[in-house]
Image (cartoon, rainbow, N blue to C red; front, side, top):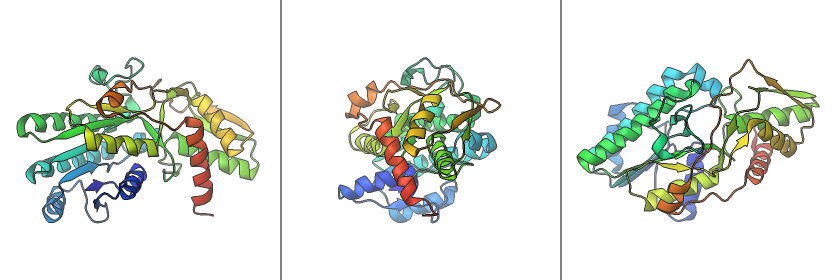
Length: 304
């Protein structure tokens, strides 16, 4: 069973499962509200999954996290705990849960190592979401120790790629920049405005790589330790803007709105554990991934 299979990363997981001839089914939001304990119990009782990959989440960029801290905390926590509990009740052989880089402390040393996860509070703008994801990791470990439930927990870095969310109210940084710059280039605008001052750094994982990592872990990792999924490469938001401007053909000025937050100052992962535990290494460069994402957006946006 795949939860969130019609979402961004879920669609890439589904594509790879389909290509591999795997037997699976989707638990869609339209059919089952995963925050509803009764509905989730009915889903597990009726469909009897043997394994679960839990990808469903309420997510968004800095603005969306600031606007929905309670909703993001509640929804993500409830979905995770309902899936884990019903997996236990119905004897599911394995549950793969997917957390977030947002769970790391705001001042975690670079690169982020999994052992540093508990050494501080997350960055304030997305802390409720990050704490909900931490709680799922705690539950996974507790259920493993008490009930023997095989639950693994992955922590992907910022993901991007085809099928991403390009809504400027809720999107993350890569799709938001792409949409703004494509629109500006087509209109002949001389500038675009971006949040912060451009100094913050991020690490980005192409969605196809992320899906491959998730499936490698689901198929071959059975440990209790959380595992980072990323590239290990850090880029400043200012340099990212330059790369996206080139890919979209925008040659105007970038204006930085310093009244808006930067978010966490730096993000870069130590990806050693994923490589050692289940052989995952990202293969798509940021330059190639951005260009492929721009091409997809230009071909698939609703006005084309």
